[in-house]
Image (cartoon, rainbow, N blue to C red; front, side):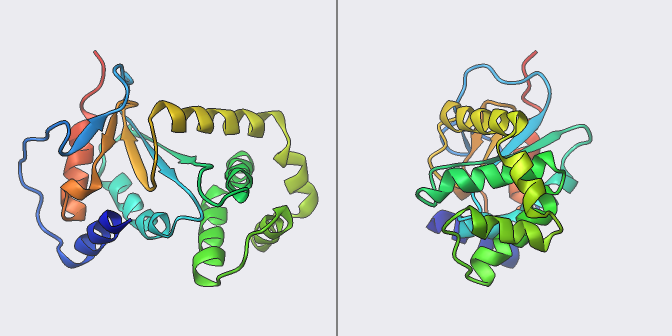
Length: 203
């Protein structure tokens, strides 16, 4: 999406100091659920097929470092990108989470798809990327259809529907606020907006 490209370019080229701002619904964020969480959290909705998610990933790591202590950051792979491979890629993410190799898998998968231009047309293509990070076929197969992975897939689908996610990358804060990335011009402004919303927890 153009708005993400503009935002990312601004983050690189315009490292502006964040200034005090009045954040408004409809401008800086949308309310996607009426009742939020009692503890601060942020969910990043993404897809390995999304080039903007690939470019956004390192900025998300910076945002985590700038957030207050105790904030829980989560990731949610959507299924609506990649046609029939969308659900397969979401399953791959869930497998990586279960096996505690998500950072390694995400890095390798983004590189395979967007840098190396490797086609992802079936599960064997996905297994090849897992093999690159040291997860053999038997281990993948054992996890892929396990109860925990199927449970994670259902939860990610519910999250995508509940928070009305239509595009990626998207960040939902405290289970209530969907950030509008076009409302910020730099990593500093995005961080300030995110940190503000993180304070808006349910009493």
